[in-house]
Amino acid sequence: MSRFDLTTLRIFVAVYNLKSLTRAAEQEHIASSAVSKRINDLETELDVQLFYRHPRGVSATPAGEALAVHARVLFERVNEMAADLSTYASGSRGEVRIHAHSSAMHQFLPCEIASFTRLYPEIRVILREETTPNVFHSMQDGIADIGVVAGHMSLPAGLSAIAWREDQLIALLPASDPLASCASVPFSALSKRSFISLETGSSLQVLLSKAAEAQGVTIDPLLEVTTFGSAIEMAAAGLGFAIMPGGVVPDDPRVLCVPLEDAWARRTLSLCIRSSGRLNAAVRLMLRHLSSEAETYRPERTPLPNE
Image (cartoon, rainbow, N blue to C red; front, side):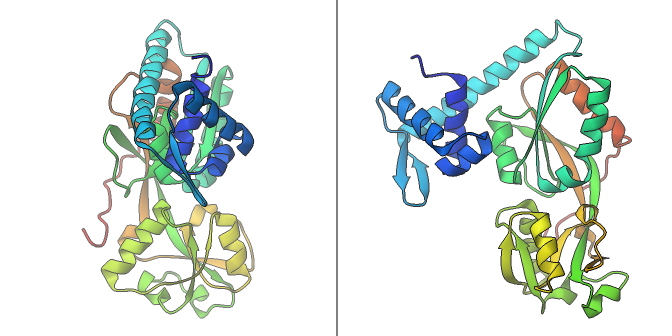
């Protein structure tokens, strides 16, 4: 089948995971029309319908579910093939694909990737920012070699994690807020303020929802944003408070960062790899580099409030 290639399969997997042609196009950095054509051509080649089309997205047909299983196995085999061949090389050339959640992208990875590329200029590093669920999907589907996620998220089957870094969650408050002068605050002290939430399903939002439920705290989401930058601007405008890692907030006189006192607010960030299969030489070099940069930091996971 002339169009049944790895690129088309990768696009199919993106549509399957995201349940949207538009979002898959954004993730793959191609036009929506190109994604639609790839899927239509694949359905024509296979003579089956892979997706049900809905006004607000798509869902897989039974044939689509079956193809997703085969695609995952195929990408795993391709990765194993690359790993086998890499044993004949020193690792000084190659490619490493890292998918990471926003906290790691903003705080730690830029400097560490820069130092890695100075050491290994012929290894291509492909870095993509994703929500934690999408990082897990990319790892399971063989599209990413290393995932970076928050340690409190449950790992899907077939993945394992290495404790890597810590970050401290803070309350981002307008400079005029009375609590902004405090050295630290408990999460419960914020319950009567308007809350600026990150998008539903993000690892940070999952953590906050569990903490609120465990403590009997009501947080009132005034609005939902998708980036830390947007949350900072909303807080600076006096629209409410946001919870985020302190390391992502630039110096800005309009807002103040107040550390959360709660034990769960000091999070572990983890490096995620597939439990089975061999890592190619370039990926092994990257893991060794990230681990050494973290100074072999291996913290214990802080239990969630309701565990």
